[in-house]
Length: 236
Image 1 (cartoon, rainbow, N blue to C red):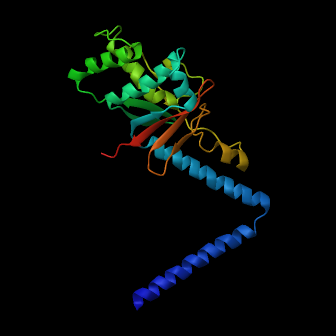
Image 2 (cartoon, rainbow, N blue to C red):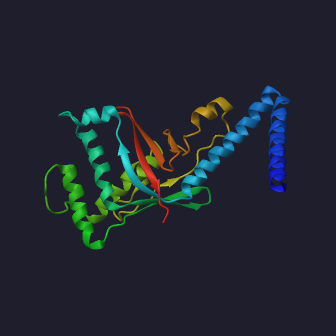
Image 3 (cartoon, rainbow, N blue to C red):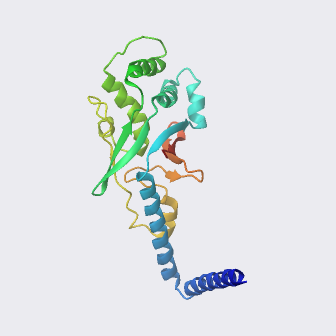
């Protein structure tokens, strides 16, 4: 009987708190209500960004747009085919994306998890798949191809005007991309709602968490529209 009473009492208190909060909102002016909603949405956006950069992400798949798929099947679709082939091939390198905070900047790292004995063979397969024929050896350095595969994973997070050398170092093969959170402070509520998934400064595409825990980064092309890179959280 006591447990039932406690449950009913907690339910009553919860309803009272909810009613009081709604009643408080009713007393706000339109401007005050919008300011409150804006503050709450800013907190949600900040929490989403923090959640993303605090975790490690394994590359899961690339979902090309319909226009990219169509273009890849045409005689002049080399660019579209190359994007799709690279996205397919990098799955063989078990790469994991992570971020390290330094002041307000987040350094991006892409770990390649392939046994040393298998690395060259996988890089050759990556090169040959893109070229469309089997060379059987690397035309360039391992570092060059490592930078290429790392760029596939990291580039979706880069700013729109970032060049290759802003994302990877082709001499060391390492990822050197740095990102910062977008600044939404000057936006009103309506604009904030429209921009809430554009989490990275300088990147006009959407970055968002899905209900299943995966991470999606959209990449927009003038030629092909919106394609998606999807990552899954590393939990081990």
